[in-house]
Image (cartoon, rainbow, N blue to C red; front, side, top):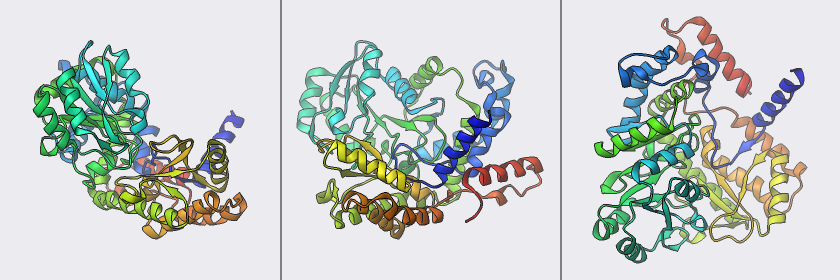
Length: 436
């Protein structure tokens, strides 16, 4: 046991020392972590009282009240949708629930191709649900070919167009797609998988997909730009589709994890009350600053002719797979974690970078420029680890703890028991370290 916890300690210390630029990750606030140390984490949450009028599993009573009184009103308000479902337990579970609700076995679904940034699992999930899969016609990696889409809709009459950008620089605008759908195949539904963008949408840094009669439904995971727990939600303004989604999650989700429900409630409270709008705007500004400085330093940054990015992601061409592996390893050894993947329009390996987590930890545009210089020293100049490690450590020392969130003093109220205040303080110190 000592060896196991020793390894856990080393892993945590490594995390404390690393600037994380992985787009599918973020960091929970100290208070959003607390539910995972409480009894709620061990309990089932079937919410039978809401469904059947009585509790069968009493461990869900506290979480159930908080979900109804706090989480759901917050989610409705921030998603700008009267019908929301927080039952999905992950992004992929959310995808499965949405597809099964909006299409039936034998139907046709249209997906973003993987070489235009579509999620690698979407087609497999669709086929396992008995759906016939077609790909969305693209003019380039970032733009739908509307004329070709119209022809596809006329000939195939799909039940669903599922927009699943996971490797994304410029989020698709749903409204023009809706115009084509309404003209050519009015019964086709449009779903926007917002897993990577929920923090930007709920903070209003990006437009809501439901606006302008765009998407019928949207939703996804809650742990990327939205700095919450590993969970998911679905939202719509249509009651009939809400009923279909609820029926789907009733079959596909057993219990939906009370600790995660509580953590998501904390996260959405913080988004509302701790400058969520500023957080979303800073993610966009920091991504552009990171990309612009990398470009100035001679790095091969994608979409320079379009302003680099319209969200949290920045794509960097590393020339070859072997070079990409070596660069990623050197950066990680120096304290910078990047996501080495294939990206649209880049042959071989590339880095998919994100500004979300460093922004969550308080990064400014100046910090993002400094971070770009650290990366460029390795990627452009071929610098060894020891040349950049001290600078990365100094930057991480400034960006070591989540911001845009409540601190311990938020619990200085007689309603909060002393032991819970002490636990919250201990969680914050233990995970992030003492003030530096």
